[in-house]
Length: 382
Ligand SMILES: [Zn+2]
Image (cartoon, rainbow, N blue to C red; front, side):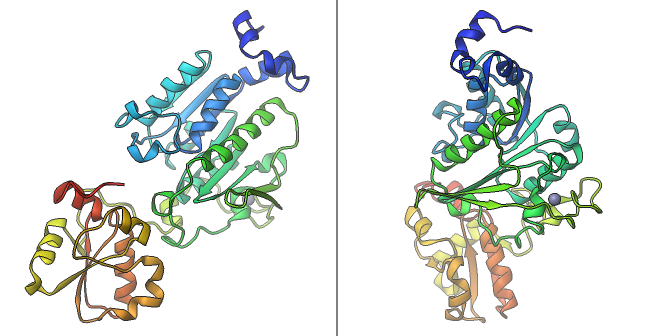
């Protein structure tokens, strides 16, 4: 099908590029891309691909827009807070370019649905923020022979590559055979991220997708691009396919999708209302703070910057990052309640201290977030 006059006007700056031209623009229109995640990376990726005239964009996201997303997730606006990210994304994309077909997958990508989700698309782009989904995306793409345009971000640093063993390059597992021990690598929610960083890495991913679709230029296959925003430096690492890789190597042992939560050592998140045997509620934390006779100390294991944003009076700060050096300041026979932002880190601290011989430990379920919801709304949420 020829481009109509509206399309010719819209894409005119592409059409006059010899590397794109009329034939290239038609290739873009014939290309479908599945974007896993409509967050920090997914935002610039989806916006630029839509603007460039990619024919079909699939968006996988089960989350809803939160105020804390708006600092970087430019698909969503203030008015979208509380809405489905996938739906908000579709609205923004179609406002930019109504020619783009947007397919919404308002669901979590899992081992059960990943192959069916990915199969209809030409290219997959990884905009995920966690290791199980990243390994899942990688394995599904290797099995289906789809290029996987990878990007990841943390604080001021990002990286990008294109994984496509069927085109001669390595896969994510060749680069990172093992996931990091659970809890050792903080997420952006725990460690923070510069708002513009996903813009830079996402734009690199979008560029790679356009080149793959056009079949032009030299892609990041076989290369890992590393970016540091503080130093404003790019570095490049040569990548090699690992012949022993369990999924793309010469004798693959992974022939179907596995349990990625288990592979990454993550115990499934309990339901929000579900209490762990080691948990106490924020009401019990309040009782401990209000009544010194109970002789319970409440330790805040978040980082000092988080403590500055919000803290509960009467708690003692001992950041998880300093725990290894400082846990000897605590008394193994004292009763402690441990709290963090949402309850995840404090549970890991509890497990660590228990290994060190501490006897009387409890984890505050829901952390300071629940405190703000249930006890004192003047404590800001972040
Ligand atoms: Zn591999």
